[in-house]
Length: 469
Ligand SMILES: Cc1cc2nc3c(=O)[nH]c(=O)nc-3n(C[C@H](O)[C@H](O)[C@H](O)COP(=O)(O)OP(=O)(O)OC[C@H]3O[C@@H](n4cnc5c(N)ncnc54)[C@H](O)[C@@H]3O)c2cc1C
Image (cartoon, rainbow, N blue to C red; front, top):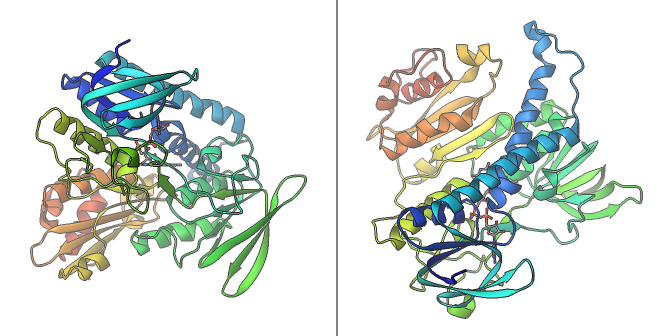
């Protein structure tokens, strides 16, 4: 097999594999190196597996309350091993799909761990242990993603103390799950097991859950956790853990000068992800890595070393699959000599809690901090016919508008299908839409999208189905 390519992509996650496919489409002779499984964190143990479990948790939760709607579903039970089989089937379908897309598009698949040994050369340690060197005449793209951060004293043991990777593969529902970290991953996975009957305790170091997200949206999720018996400890630190011989643990948690010991069955540590930029030869060939481990790039995804690009989680926040994929496409276009730039207005973000939160652009506070004369219009799902008919009435849509220009600068949704509704919101921001544009667009009835139309109208005092304030 030839070891000479025009471009080599290191890492086959949603950044790397998309970049490799696009490069091959653009006629560039490309190889993509992956040490684990194509699809990266996203397909193997991140976005997709977690969302499959979240969807199941939602079915289960809904089935239990259907009697009030006149539908009796008797004997609803959770079968964790079967659920895992089903989830693994989805993962397999998607990861093998990525492999065949790469192959059929003409990308050479190289399995093994890659390390830069020169500006245009990667040494690959193959799964067999053998070594091979591959060179790129045009470009090397670093797409090595990110890895889970561990907390000293709470190192993963795969049984009692686990990370997200293990949490998406549990074959038994824990009686009591203690989650260290009230961010996106901790809350998403914590709420899955809460829905399946686990007692949930969330220990968060800062004074609020989901930092950076509209606080009114966060309150709705918080209320749902506590409504179902969950405990949220804010400004609290998980200090130490004592594992019990027969399984389970006692976790010492300090807050406000006091320490309490919480007994639980499993501890999920979810304090974030760190870029995988170490040990791959970046510094040896002169690529800058910042203090947090990210590889800085310009709007063309170029690092400081000509011919070396970086995309996805390893190149900076937000650490999201869709941001990684878009950067993959930008890098491919640039390498092929086309116009390509990271010139998007905003990157939507979603938290797949119950209910879901989805946001784009600025919160009201952020807009005001930037000196905008901003106003928020809000429409609750509790008064929307469609939301009532699907029995999902928690939450609202909030549209933040700059009243001087009429431009929408942020949209924040907490509620049913927020993850789907946000695409219209993202398009609105990209197209520099005004609140009037959204309000005047006919939204079909009865749909959840009407809430977005009404919230936009509310931000300019024109809502019909809610009082304008
Ligand atoms: C539990 C969880 C849920 C998530 N849910 C969502 C979600 O709902 N939506 C969303 O947008 N994002 C979500 N994310 C984040 C998302 O998974 C990442 O942003 C995304 O996977 C980043 O893509 P990437 O290509 O940059 O890196 P990765 O997906 O991390 O892929 C990098 C790949 O490079 C390989 N690699 C690394 N080093 C080497 C090397 N030296 N040689 C060869 N191969 C190497 C790795 O094995 C890996 O396959 C979630 C993450 C987690 C952990």
